[in-house]
Amino acid sequence: MKLAIIGVGLIGGSLGLCLKDKLGEKIFITGLCRTETSMQKAVELGAVDLATSDLKKVVEDADIIFLSPPVLQIVPMVKKILPYLKSGAILTDAGSTKNFIYRELKKILPQDIFYIPGHPMTGREKSGVEAANKNLFQNKAYVIIEDKNIPAEIYDKLMQVLRLTDAKFISLEIEKHDRCAAIISHVPHVTAAALVTLLNRAGDDLESCLKLIGGGFKDTTRIASSNADMWADICMTNSDAISANLRDLQNILGEVIKSIENHDRQAIHDYFTQSKKRRDEILETVEKKFDPN
Image (cartoon, rainbow, N blue to C red; front, side, top):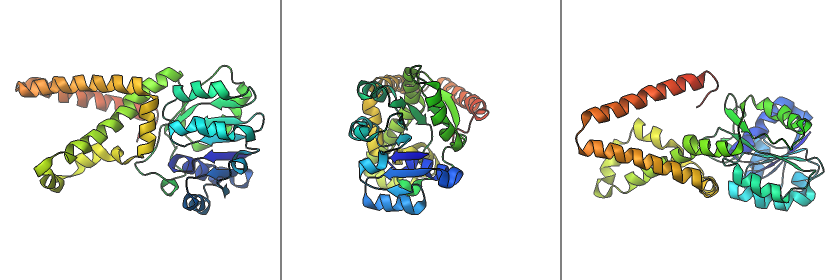
């Protein structure tokens, strides 16, 4: 088995570490990183067997190509590697938005090159192969978008490899994936960044605010430390769902503002009570299926 990883960062590097740990010499992994330093680190850590900037060497004869650059770089990258792909090669990705990539790749892929959209719902606030962990996918949701035009044996070939991550695989319609990802992932990231921006605009109170920072601020803004390139691309490729849900969030905050301004303690109490109850119910249900952390 030959696997090519385009973008040996946190996600790509973690996949490489996992598969080398499980398969050893039964799999040969090539990787493309952004810098020479990253390439050396990827080999040193054991995430790949070979790292190079030569695209042909990375993807030629690869059975599976795992695409893990920022979303807007995926389609241009596929256009570059397409001439070097062998017949029957399988493309899959880790992009947080799916419909944009799917539509664009369907326009350019020949019939003997197969694209199966994927989205491992995992990550850390740190990026780069140095942050990779062979257990990153374990018990985490991993969305696979099914396409009836893809032969069953192609799906099986990919899933035999991906199941080694011990992720919890979920099948979703592509539009539903993007809508749900906006609610549970994309809008929270935008909101976390907004809270940091709010603090940064505290003016004369900023220094005093910094002295008071504790667990609450750290917990609610942790994901604001994520990769900016990745999140800018996500916002550009899932703009309708993200903007619609941000408007819904804006309306919710507007209701809270009105209750606070009216000194309506009961309304505020109900707001927090209902949110706590619903969050506890959600996490209890979710944790029975997979680890959401």
